[in-house]
Picture: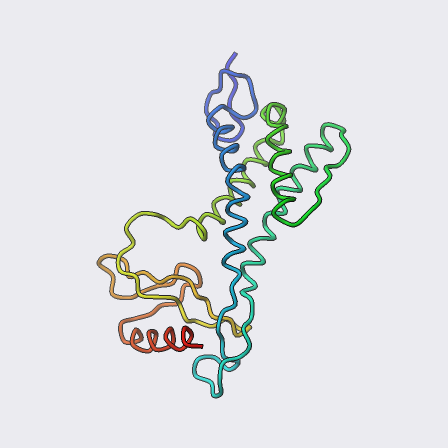
Amino acid sequence: MDTTCTHCHNPDPTGSTLCVPCTTRLTGQLQQLPRMFAGLGMLLAPSMATGQGRGGKGGPAPLPIDDRMFDHRQEFDVVYAWLSAVHDARRLQGPRLTGDALTRLHTAVAGLLAHMPWIVLWPGAHDLATEIGDLHRNASSIVDPDPRPRGRRIGHCQSIDPSGTICGAVLWLAPGEQVVRCDWCSMAWPPATWMQLRAWQAESAAA
C-alpha cells in the first residue's frame, strides 16, 4: 500500500518514511558535505581591515580571520548530532568521532550513510533530511555559487563589519542593474563608489 513521504509529501510505494527521490537527494548531500567543509576551510584566509573603518587614519590593522567562516563550519555539528540521535534511537553505543574536524565529519557522514536503510523508515527522517538540506544549501551558497550568468564581476566587497573585518565576497553587477549589491552582507555599491572600491582592493592586494 502506498504511503506518503514525510519530507516531500508525495506518494511513495515503498512504505518508507522517506521516498526514494528524497533518500537519493539526502545521500548525495551527505556525500558532498566533507568537500564543502574543506572548501570553507580554504576560505578561512586572513582579510585586511583598518581598526577605524575605511575612512579611519593609520595603516592596516593585523590580519584577522574571518569569523563567519568559523561559524559556517560549526554548522556542520548538526551531522554529528544526527548520528548520535540515530545511535540513541537504535539503542547503540554512542559514535566514536576522533581525529581532526574533517576526519570526524567523514566518519559521521559514513555512519549516517551506513544507517540509511534504517533511517528511511525512521519517524525522524524528515527532520534529518530538512536539517542536512539546510546545511548543504548554506554551504553550497559559499563554496558552490550559482553557476548561472551573473553579469560583470566588479571585485570583492570592501564593507567592514563592527569587528573591523572586511566582507571580501565577490561582487557582481547583474545584467540590467546599475547598482552592485553584495550577496553576503547586502552592502550596495553604486557606480560613484566603484573607483574608490578599486582603490581599496588594490590597497588590500598590495598589503
